[in-house]
Amino acid sequence: MRVLNRLMMSAALVVASAGAASAAEVEVLHWWTSGGEAAALNVLKQDLEGQGITWRDMPVAGGGGEAAMTALRARVTAGDAPTAVQVLGFDLLDWTEQGDVLANLDEVAQAGNWDAVIPAALQRFSKPGDHWVAAPVNVHSTNWVWANKAVLDELGISQPTTWDEFIAALQKAKDGGKVALAHGGQPWQEATIFDSAVLASGGPEFYQKSMIDLDPEALGSDQMVAAFDKMEQLRGFVDDNFSGRDWNLASAMVINGEAAFQIMGDWAKGEFLNAGKQPGTDFLCFRVPGTDGVVTFNSDQFMMFRQDDPEATKAQMAMAAAIESPEFQVAFNTVKGSVPARSAAPDTEFDDCGKKGMADLKAASEAGTLLGSMGHGHANPAAVKNAMYDVITAHFNGEYDSRQAAEELVNAVEGAQ
Image (cartoon, rainbow, N blue to C red; front, side, top):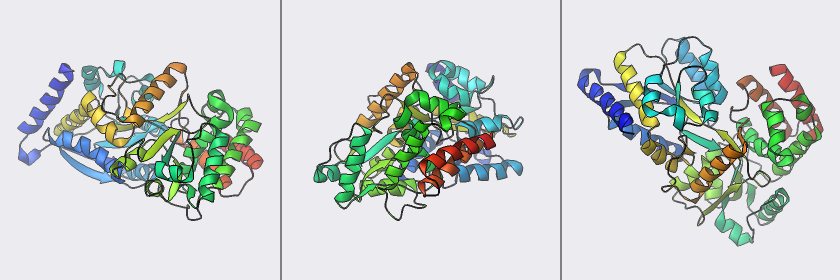
């Protein structure tokens, strides 16, 4: 820790000595535009500004990051790469194949002991070869349910522990005049739900075979048909205006008591906290019934692009060091809803949902049930992910029955590989 602090102080002194005329700056491309996300990102902005580093914001709205990646490609093609870019999973790996465009973070990583404190599952993306090219900010997991406690109490609904109990709870909420399942009809949101439907239908081994290994027999199996059947069940509990709705607006429906439940990654918690809600008192957080013991994860990372200006490089290195400091990891993730990317970070500052998330992550990592989220680009490359998106969304909108969807999934994956 003393080494890391010295590195950050050194970077700050270099920046300060550059003078006002050439003040160091980081330009950051990201898609954290909702209230809770912006509040979390502000933690990093303030950290860097305290070091004399100016933050130039380049937000690109869109919860799944597709629009941000399109904007990034345009910038890089024009020879104007930003300093740092928020990126997920295989999108990061794609950039490592684009030639010498990424920065080398090895010096910062060595000073911060990243090899020892960042889990191997994350290093697969942030250190895909011999060099660190990205700094992981957090670990999110996708198989969460968020519920309005007052709505559940009003309707006499207990927290469900099995899939059948969950469906019964959704039905009771619908019968009570509430939107049972808040959802935004966007492909990545349907894929988020599908992560859990696959797990609830076949367990972690089936998820590994189908979503990660892309085994054709598993993709077209009766278990996959059962997963699509579960999606059909859930489709019956969304409201008529779900199409195109952003995820945070679906979260707001639960926060405001318009809806009872939402299946969404733990970034949703940031919206509840930003609205002044407290876990256990105002809202409940629990794993999607049928997925206990498994964590489907994604990890936001800041990928760094090589800079020609030495001052920009120094600011970039300071940003990377700040991201991996234990203090920042705790401060950021308590606001964001995720858990630290650094292992062994203390959980004392986290609320009950955060503590559960950290404990679940540790247990899943030890049990071998920490699995990359298909829906969030941590299971397979973008071409495969997007092919799956097309089938999942088409089925959710009634274009295929469950058997047809499983067959189309096999064809789509085969065509994308």
